Image (cartoon, rainbow, N blue to C red):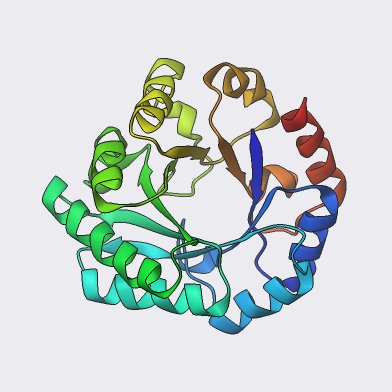
Amino acid sequence: MKLLVSPVNKEEAIIASKGGADIVDVKNPKEGSLGANFPWIIKEIKEAVNGKQPISATIGDFNYKPGTAALAAFGAAVAGADYIKVGLYDIQTREQALELLTKITRAVKDYDSTKKIVASGYSDYKRINSISPMLLPAVAAEAGADVVMVDTAIKDGKSTFEFMDEKELKKFTDLAHKYGLENAIAGSLRFEDLPMLERIRPDIIGVRGMVCGGDRRTAIRRELVEKLAAECQA
């Protein structure tokens, strides 16, 4: 499993990079689960990491605004993100999801075809009345995206595993692979979840709170990144 760690600034990004993260993910927790950070922060982190890891950047928890999302995705790509990640937060139908992802993919791939689009659904989708993440692999593949992800929309300490069990997450992983996509699991993951994650075998796990000592509002700690990186490599 690859380890994606989500810093909020250059200092945390350096810690994540030196601690052994495989992907450094730029986000802004103040703006939600997949809150977007500023283009200059993406650039600063890109320069600080200096090619040691690819950079991921979130563009927000989106409702049905394909134009706005496409422009935001293009901005993240220009700022230096290698992975551009969007949350399908208030997306009600398969058709809305397909149009949103198709427009994002075109905006980014027309600029640089090597950059990857990450479509994120939410394990607690029923709490926010959004689309089921189980629909995403087929939609993302049709739209030309590269990765499908599941996260928690509401950051109240509840884990993805409280909304989707091992069997469902394994099915999500298998569906992603069936459609030729990578997949990622995130959402208040804990060290005690690692045995289950190893059975599910996602391509990527995404964390912040886990390497902040349990509270995503505090700072990333290098020793926890190192511990988790070692577990993922094992």
